[in-house]
Amino acid sequence: MSAHAKPLSIRDALYEAPGPRTKRRMVIGTAVSLVLVAIGIALIIRQFYITGQLAPRYWTFLAQPTTWRYLLQGFRGTVSVALTAGAMSLVLGLVLMLGRTSGIRPLSALCRIVTDFFRGVPSLLLIYFFFLVVPQYGIKLSAFWMITLPVMLAASGVLAEVMRAGVNAVPKGQVEAAMSLGMRRGRIMFKIVLPQAIRFVIPSLISQLVVVVKDTTVAYVVSYPDLMQNARVLITNYDALVSMYFTIAIVYILLNYAINKLSAVVAERMGVKIIR
Image 1 (cartoon, rainbow, N blue to C red):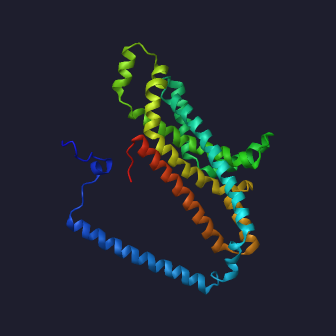
Image 2: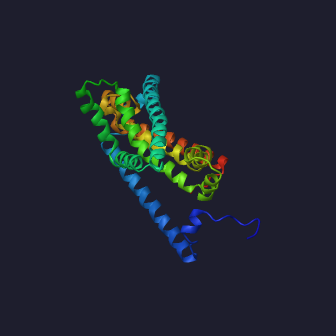
Image 3: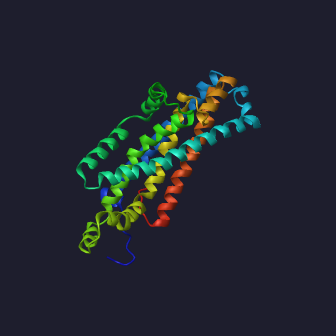
């Protein structure tokens, strides 16, 4: 292989380069799709116009500073829940991963069951559990924790599997070499395997924060004042369903885009290959 040859990426390994005929079909398909999307958007805007949703009274309130101050309060609530749940899920995910890869069969089986449970149960169901069931046992939680804990538990199952994938990506030869030198399994994990595993998966860990942010949108169940809950209040006050949801959608898109860009930047600086 030439020194200047481009390294083979995962995408190159999975998919062969399209030929001229396939490229033409892709161009035609893309053009037709864009036309259909444009027509769909035009029909939606036309329907909004017919029903009066584009009237100025549904949009002028967005120019008021008080509207954005109120939304900013909700945005802070969303960020607080997302960061807290994200940090806690990293810790719990790490514990579950370590337990599952410990080699102790009962502990490994227990951690696998817990991981699969949190991965399989919808976060909304966990939120209802903390909102309706937990208080029946005399445990009183604030609205912040009634949304943060369920989101954290749901994310921890996914993060545990992401970290386990990183551990499996570390060459087995390094572990065998360390064992031949008399190092204990725990020392090998924390000194050799785990630092490399975290480096492999840290972009995926950051990207998982997007899912955490999305899960916070159901905070209205516990009446926590996040971005979506405050938007619902504004919708009720101004009867502006379309304009408010459109604005909130733009905010969430920009936030999640920023998280994905951060993940890509971290991956590039750490030399970790990601599929774009």
